[in-house]
Image (cartoon, rainbow, N blue to C red; front, side):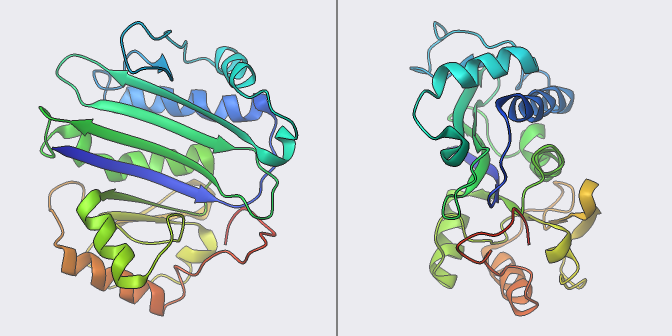
Amino acid sequence: MLNVVVNGFWGLRGESVAAVAERWAGTLTGLGGIDGRTFDVWHEAGDGEPSDPVQEPSAPALAEYIERTNTGPDLDVAGYTASLWARNPAAAHVSLAIHAGSTSQYAVNSVSLAFRSREVDETAEVIRRAPEILRLLSEHWEFDTGQVYDRPLYRAVAERFDLENSDPRCGRAVFLSAGRAALAPDELPATYVRTAHGGLVIDLTRGGTQSPAVETVIEANTLLRAAGALEKLPVPFDRAAF
């Protein structure tokens, strides 16, 4: 069963609804360019059925959706949470969730794109391009760290290093912000792709051509941690990125 996630996290960064919507709209456009079949028709969060409202992937429409679904107090501190899903013919079910705009010194901002399917497997082109999707997300959301993982790999890394959900780590691929990238060793068995804003994607799949063993990923985490590239942001947060 396919269960692959691409995600990213960052610390406090106050943003307006309009700014968050611009990032989200750019993300949806970029995803469509990578795989138009998988990322075609997006629905608002609901029951995961075709009857859920279809969301227009434009910044004004997304801003209206974010405002409509975030009605609590102190949103400038708590941030904005929203999600979309797509399930198109012969493609994996995907969900894209955001929590952005928070200025809390104790709440993590995040973006997460999840692929799930009983019919589509990890040989699908869109899954092989997951490190490219990580780069795309990083450039639109300017996050601190991010990764590509499947559930068994996620559990293995979390247990080996005793990690909380939002702690920096390396999966099949890892994104490092500029400060972290400057510390990264260059001898990992991976391709290194520079991103906008000075970041770096270290891709252990080498462009989707390899499937790294758990031991390889554990060793990559060990080396990155020893170099200081996977240190936690200090809490309370005083910035968005390392």
